[in-house]
Each structure stands twice: as structure tokens, then as C-alpha cells.
Image 1 (cartoon, rainbow, N blue to C red):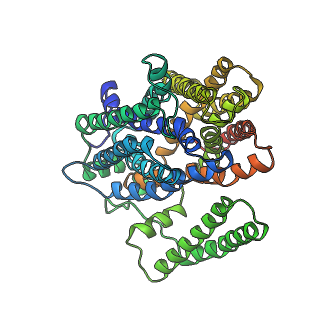
Image 2: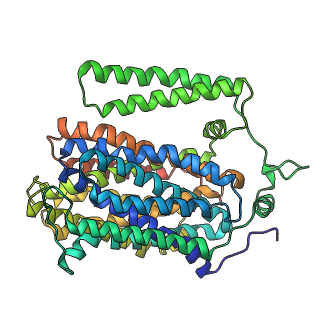
Image 3: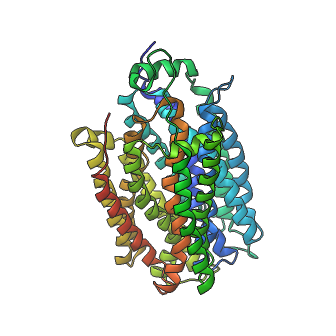
Amino acid sequence: MAKRPHLSFWQIWNMSFGFLGIQFGFALQNANVSRIFETLGAKVEDIPILWVAAPLTGLIIQPIIGHLSDNTWNIFGRRRPFFFIGALLASVALFIMPNSPVLWIAAGMLWIMDASINVSMEPFRAFVGDMLPANQRTSGFAMQSFFIGTGAVVASALPYILTNVFGVGNEPINGQMPASVKYSFYLGGAVFFLSVLWTVFSTKEYPPEQLAEFEKEEHPERFTKQETRIVEKYEHSGKFLRNALIVLPIGLIICIYVWYNGLQKELYILGGGLSGYAIMQFITAYMSFNGHTSNGFFSVNNDLNHLPKAMSQLAVVQFFSWFALFAMWIYTTPAVTEHIYGTTDPSSVLYNEGANWVGIMFAVYNGFAALVAFLLPVIAKYTNRKITHMIALIAGGLGLASIYLFNSPQMLIVSMVGVGFAWASILSMPYAILTGSLPQNKLGTFMGIFNFFIVIPQILAASILGFLVKNLFGGHAISALVLGGISMIIAAVLTLFVEDKN
């Protein structure tokens, strides 16, 4: 069997079902963590620095997991062992998170929870490239978007449903989380674990030898004529050293400037991140010079210097898209409770009513994303994937910025419809464009590296948004959402410059 076989609708359903649980946990995190932090005493300008654990974890974990899953094969499969391990750890973290007694424990649990979610999530992206032929991959990622939206709808609305339908308490008692939040996280842990188990036991993987045959048939130009071995590109140590010497001074200057002027401590993340990247380049240059190239550290850094053209172009689009999303996840709760409900007191009934409504807003955008997910391949068929993504991002940018214009909770549903359109496309179109340009034996690694361009804007947002809200926006969180909307529209324009080849 030289060609990758087409899978049926239900086979694609089964291989994607685990994303229902992954997004269940992710949505609970996005909709409730700012609320947990504020309940435990965090100030609004301090929330981004507490959130930074999540993107930093993804930056470290995803390339490692991608590389490991590319090079794993045992009786449990290639990607499936990582699905299972991540689901088990994330489910435990979801049970512990809402019971955090103090702020630093909640921040630590966010770190652990996000790391575990990443262990499960990253191989799922590569799984589509493993299992589906090129002409089914857009549908495969659309199916993932459907489950992401469906899981997030229920998860985001859970506190509201538990309070208003089942009468579960929604007020913090003695500084502890409301019962509605606790029970939501308990249910989320169970759903996460069981849905991933469904994919693990219902889907079989192709062995590495079979995947190599598929790759030879689909992309013979990537192989030598005599061998079934993909031709590798290795960078000379000089380029790594040059990168390090350019970036390190910039990182150090930022750190010194922040220290000298007594600026907010989260700005150190930006300078420290650049300095950390420079140190990695120094180490890689040393390895290259001494011939120590047969290890995962060198492999990931070397691949980072040989990105496919489409991936480099999509990286810029992803940067502005995810900056907007992270601004939304961090600041929607404080923005809505202040701008719409007129309160900044996390212990008040009005604040917790507004926080529950944010859960409904997040449920709406995820629900609309689930509905529109299967429409995206149709739009792409009559236009193309770039135009489809551009339209969706414009709708999302306008939706996010429009929150500033409304003064009633119900009108915010309109804003979330636009965000949902963008969210469905962000979760599918960039990956559908990207997958065909990646070599099969490094699919997980490159998907992990692609995550850099999701994580870096989130780290930047965590570094500067608190500073901007406090010093430029007068403490009004709603301005961060407007900035996010502008960022998403910039991403829409940049989509037109992406190369998209089947």
C-alpha cells in the first residue's frame, strides 16, 4: 500500500474525539483562571505575569514532545502514548487547581496543567498528517475544530449552568473558589481522560516503515535516489553563532533598561526570553562545531533554521492572531465586569455574575466555531484557504474590538460570533496549509516548532499588556481587548502573503 488510504467520516471522528477533552480542560482554564487568581488576591495588572506559565510551558514542552513522538514506536503506537500520559496528568491537575489555597499554588498548578495539556495536544496535530492523505487534511483539522468548539461550549458555560440550572453556589466562601467552579473542574478532569481514551483505543497507527513508504510516494524529491532516507539539511555553526551574537545584546539591553528605570517586573520576560534564545544558539553552535549533531536539542534548533517557506510566512500571521487571543483570555473577565457590570470587587455578587457571563460568552464563540468548522472547507473550495482565513480573522478582529461599543451583556453575544468564526479558522486553516510542506519523519518536531509562533506572542502579551493597561490605558482592561482586535485584523492582511500549495 504505497498511498495513504482515505478514511471514513467515523474514522476521522474517532481519531479526533480526544480533542473534545483537551479543549474541555483548555476552556475551563481560559474562562476561569483569571477569576481564580483575582479571588486569591491578584491585582488586575498582575494577572498577565501569572498567566505566563502557560505559554512558557508550551514553548518548552511542545518541541520536545513533537521530537519524542516522531521517534517513538512501541506496542502502544507513535502518538497515542503521549495522548494517554498527558490526559492522565491534566485530569489530576484539573481536580487540584480549584482547591488552591493561595495564589502561588494556583500559579504553579496552571503551569502543571498547561504542561500536561500540551503533552496530549501537540501529537494530535501531527496525528492528522500521519493518518490522512493531503486532500482529507483540511477536513481532519476541521473535525478537530468541531470537537474543540463543542468541548469548549460546555466547559465555558459549566459554572453558569451549575448555578442557574442546578442551584450550585456561585459565591466564594472564606476565600475559597465557588462550588460552581470546583465542580466544573472535577467534571472537566473526567471528560478529558475519558475522551482521550476513546481515541487511544479506537484508532490504530501506521508503523514508521509504512509512513516512510507513504512519504516516498507523495514526496519523492525529499529522498535520496538509492535510499528510503529523507535528505537532512545541517546548518554550519557560524549561523548559530551569528544569531546568538545579534540577539543576546538586545535581550541584555532590555533587562538593563527595565532594571534601571524600575519598570514592571514582567518586562524582564521579554529580555530574558531573548537572552535564553541566544544561549541556546551558542550551545547549538558548539555542538555543530564539534560534530555533536545526533541529539534532539541540536535537531530542534537546526530545524528552526530550516523552516519551510509557508511556515515562515504563517509564523507572522500566527503571531498577531494569538496575541489577540491571549489578550482576550487574560482580560475578558476584568474588562466585562468593569465595563459592563461596573465592579472591580471579586468578592461581590455582581462581579461573579459577570464572570459567569464571560463563561457564556466563551461558550458562544466556541459553539459558533464548532458549527462553522465544517463550513470552512466549503468556503475554501470556492475561494482558497488563504481567503477563507483572512475573512475569518477580519470577523474576529471586529468582534473583539466591538466589545468596547456595547453596554449590555446580551449584545456581547454578537461580538463572540465574530470571534468564533476566527477561532474555527485559526484552529484549522494554518495547519491545513502547513502540513503538506512538512517531512513525515519530522512532522511532530515542526508542529512543535510552529507552536513557538503561538507561544511567543502570548509571552509578549504577558510581558507588556499589564504594563500597557496600568500606564497607558488607565487601568481599564477593555482597552486590551480593542488592541487585540486590531492585532487580529493585521493578521488577516498578512494572510494574503502566505504561499499555499497542496
